[in-house]
Image 1 (tube, rainbow, N blue to C red):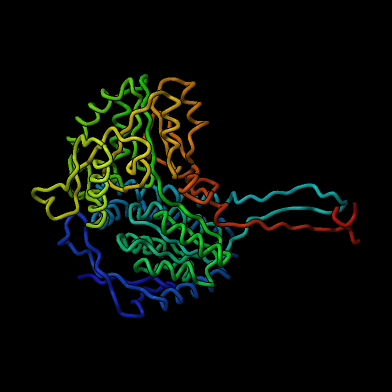
Image 2: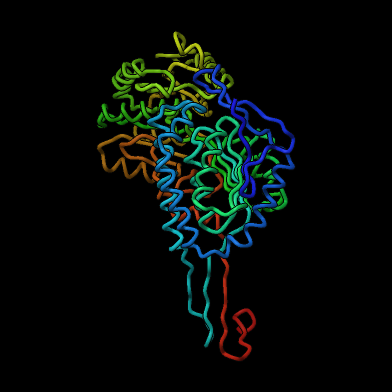
Amino acid sequence: MEQFKNYINGEWVAPVSGEYFKNISPANQTDIIGDFPLSGQADVDNAVKAANEAFKTWKRMPAPKRGDILRIAGDIFTRRKKELGRVMTREMGKPTFETEGDVQEAIDTAYYAASETRRLFGNTAPSEMENKVNMTFRVPIGVCGIITAWNFPVAVPSWKILPALAAGNTVVFKPSKDAPQSGVVMAEILEEAGVPAGVFNLVLGTGRMGNMLVEHPDINLIGFTGSTDIGFKIGEICGRTNKICSLEMGGKNAQIVMPDANFDLAIEGVLWGAFGTTGQRCTATSRLIIHKDCYDEVLDMLTKRTVKLKLGDGLVEGTEVGPVIHETSLKNVDNYVKIALEEGGRLVCGGKRATGGDLDKGCFYEPTIVADVTRDKRLFNEEVFGPLLCVSKAESFEDSIEMQNHCDFGLSSSIYTRNVNQAFAAMRDIEAGITYINAPTIGAEAHMPFGGVKGTGNGHREGGTTVFDIFTEWKTVYVDFSDELQRAQIDNY
């Protein structure tokens, strides 16, 4: 069995403890991918020390030169796209057409971040005094601890790591224990691209290791994507230790369908949004809100399509829906189905573990629809992270917007309508960081801001130029060439 290593200070090294954990494929639980380092405090300390030392020179490299390295990384991601896609599929389950799209996000982000190294613009402003110039610069923050989830094991880390490096920061990256090999390949790519020793460090391990990063006194910033519960705990620690903290957490995203919508298009949207990545996206369509005048028709159309979805190993061509990530997740989905039915929901299709043939080897759950769920029920309000869609009836357009907003999360949202007035009202009134018109709740683009409101995040936005608001801070500089003491307004008026 292959034994993997951490990547610290430009070297592939075994964990100090000599302990490892096994990474198991969710599509075939007899397929053990390898042994991965069960890192501890000593490994984290070594990585942080290396990152701190490397920061002294990396921050002084001209930003466009850093961009040149990221551009090369984009080329290598492109060359290794299919290979990396299969690595991801094997360890986290979604079909290769999805994992190759995951890699494409990294490719796009690498090229975008590289181009932005020539646009890390500051501002100048007139001084109130003669012979004086006022200006601002973006400057890097220091060592960034990056902690990400397993469902997008390359795309999401790239959204954080590549802009962080572009801005002149150094990184210690802790990927999910459920997708560690993807992190290994990312480290290989950045090493080949020419990222200097210590600038990027990979430390593998379980959740407790993430806490070591968050608590570490020499880490200046935490970038996190994961569950809301863990995110809140990270926010508390960062508040106490005065660390910059970017949190991307849960979602309970709704797609609204109005009577004037293109129903075929809306069905395609909800199928992709609810069951793509087996419903394991923070932007997944977890709720479908249908206007009462088309409720039965849309639900019937959706059900006929859902039961035809092909489950299977994502490495097998033709698979549309892969496994959930592990047995714990499978049991969680099944538990939410039971809760929904106990609370009065109506099971339309699915509702149990998928079995038969090769499905018996993995963690497969039938794509499931529970209808007639009202806004006071748990399934309507709580994130499930699996192939379980909650369907609810709205009495009017206004009611549909109120139902969409009746949730503690606010990441993504969607409405299908041909009514331009309702479309613009939805853009205005929906409480979410992202709103799609006549498109599903998934499909973010790398050059646009990504993030949510309410319980989804703490106000930061990844993607686009806004990501540099996370990974840089402002420095204001005053240059006085008057050869005399000039007093600013606080001392002069």
